[in-house]
Amino acid sequence: MKLNVNTEIALTYLATRKKQTMVAAMGVMFGISMFIFMQSLMKGTNDYFEKMSFNSTPHIRLYSENQVADNHMLVNFLKDPSTKVLTNPKQLIQTQGIINPYGIIREIKANPQVTNVTPQVAADVIYTSGSVQINGNVAGVNIDQEDKMFDVQGNMVSGDLHDLNRVNNGLLIGKGVADKLSLHVGDNITVTSGTGSPTIMRVVGIFATTIKQVDDTKSYANIVQAQNLLGKDRSYVTDIKINIRDYNNAPEVARDLETLTGYKAEDWVKANEQLKAAFKIRAVILNSVIGVILLVAGFGIYNILNMTIYEKIKEIAILKAQGFSGPAVTSIFLQQAIYIGLMGGIVGVICGFGITYMVSRIYIGAGTLKYLPMSFYIPHYIEAICFGILTTIAAGFFPARKASKVDPVTIIRG
Image (cartoon, rainbow, N blue to C red; front, side, top):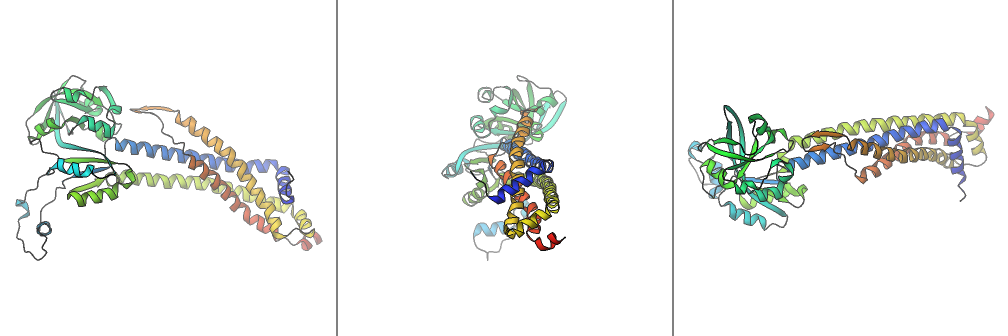
C-alpha cells in the first residue's frame, strides 16, 4: 500500500533521528506503564478494602438512634405543630431495641433491591480469661444468614462456625481476642455484659478479617445467647443488617427505609467515610505523579520536534516552495508525534501489564491477604493509550504549527 507523501516524510524524519525517537518513545512508554501500574494498584487495593469492609459492614444498617427526647420529637409524633408540650427530657426513656423487628424485616424483604436481611443483637462486653480482662462486643446473629451475607467461613482460622448452632454457650472470637487471652478452640471464657450476669462460654472457632479493630474486639454468638447475656426477651433486636443488589444505590435505599420504618438507616458510605476519603486522597496523589511523568515525556517530544525543525528548516522551506501548504507541514510533524506516542503506548501497555502481573505475585502473607491485590481492569489500558497519544499530540502541536509558518523566501535567501 502506497503511503501518503506527508506520512513518508514524517517516517523519514523519525528514521534519521533514531536515538532521539527512541528516547521520546521510552518517555511515553515509562509514563504509560506507570499509569497502568499505579491505576491497577489503586483499584486493586480499593476493591480489596471495600470487600474487607463488607466482610463486617452491611450495605445498610437499620437501628434505633439513641437520642435525647425533646419537645420537637413529641410535637412531630402528635402531628400538630401548635400543640404545646411540657417535658423533662431526662425522664423520657427510649429503648435501644427495634420494636416489632421481624415485622419490619418482612417489609424490608418486599423491596426488590434487597438481597439479604438478618437481625442482630449487639452487646458491649468484657472478656475474662484467668486474670486478664479486655473490652469487646458480641454480635448475636443467625450464623447461617451471617455467613451468607459476610462470608464468615472465608475468614475462619480454626474451628467450625456451625458449632455456634450446636454448642450451648458457643462463641466465635476474633484472632486478636484469642491472642490477647491465649485462647484456643475448646477453651472457656467468661463474658460479662453491662446488664447481665457473667456467663461462661466455650470458644468454638477463631476468625481473622485482617481488620485490627474487628479482630481485637469482636465475637459472634447465637442470637438467643446474646439476648440472654443482656437479660432480654426473644423479641429484642438492636440492628437489622441489609444487603442490596447494587451497593452503590445504598444511600438512596437507606433513605427509603428510614421513611418506611421510622428508624435510622446508615449506609456503608457513611459508615466508611474515612476509608472513602483515604481513597480520594490516594487517587489525587497517584494521578498527580502519573501526570508529572507524562508531562516530562511530553516535554521530551516537544524538544525533539523543535530540534528537528531547526535542523530541517531549509528542507521545510524547500517543501513549502514546492507547493506544500501550512496544514501539510503541520501534518508531517504531528504525525511524527503520533507515531512516537503509538510506539511508546504499545510497548508501555505491554510493560505495564508485565509489571502489574509480577507485583501481583509478591507474597506478603498478611492474614487472609496472601498476595498484593492488583486489578487487571481493561479500561485502564485503553485510558493509558488515549492519554499517551493525547499527550504526544499536545506536545507536537506547537512545533508543528511553528514549522507551518516558516517563510521559504526568507530561509532560502539566508
